[in-house]
Image (cartoon, rainbow, N blue to C red; front, side, top):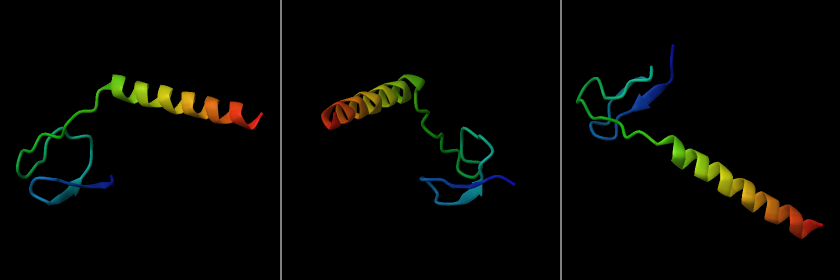
Length: 56
């Protein structure tokens, strides 16, 4: 049994099994690009590096 996911369009819950669209209303979920995730990770690492440099 998977996790439940709520559709932001129709507010109905359904089992999240990696679907790209709501099975009830057809709302297509936006896809987050991999590059956005990579940039976020890099920025977090840079902020941590600066924070650790300030401690020493």
